[in-house]
Amino acid sequence: MAVIELLNSKHKSKKKGYFVLVDPDKKTVDIEKIVKNVNRSFVDALLVGGSKCDKRGFNTFIKKLGSMTETPLVIFPGSHDQISRSADAILLLSLLNSLSLKHVIGEHINGAKKIVKSGIEVIPTAYIVMDRSGKTSVSQAAQIMKLVNNRDVDRYLYASAMMSYKVVYLEAGSGSEKTIPESVIKRAGDIIDKPIIVGGGIRDVKTAKRILSAGADYIVTGNAIENDPDLILDFGALVKGF
Ligand code: 1GP
Image (cartoon, rainbow, N blue to C red):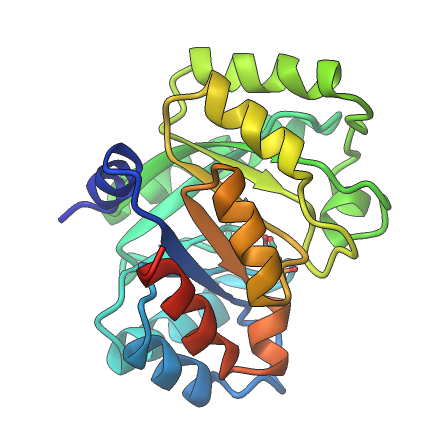
């Protein structure tokens, strides 16, 4: 099944989903344990991406993951170097509230030919970053325009609903102290009839439950499961029983 079909089917049937994010740059993380728990839990896909990883290192990492799991591997690209034909799909992220053209369209142009030649499934993704601290790496690298109030956010949500993106990813930033506010997730659910992915700062099941109850179709966890891979089992059980 194409990854977008999976995303759409859960969205339409109001089921919840779970993505585990792994970063090839983080060499001290216990990747074997993470993948072992992914295989035992209810994880819809492994998102793979990081801010620095080069072409060769990325491809090697994806191949290694592919040898360890049947779970779909979806590229969450940190740059146009992070493309591999061994992945199942790529979230082609357009960072809508960035002042840096590179993050809205530039990386896409640089990677386009390679993506087409790779034959992997492409999922155009409206990527909206709401990092209220402004301290996470995405905020600092991508010149984020701060979304201060609901009226600001609404403009981006309506644009995401209208344009040809297949999914919408509401991002608080990796390791963020605060998650995306529930009020924003609710607004997104009212305005957009597409799968909504929410990530950044989700550290425990209680928070994940609030985010899913507010209307997220999918949650993403990265830092939390790097620190404690057993949390994958808890997040998976939450999503399965929702
Ligand atoms: C980052 O949304 C993801 O892009 C996950 O964030 O590492 O804080 O879970 P965390």
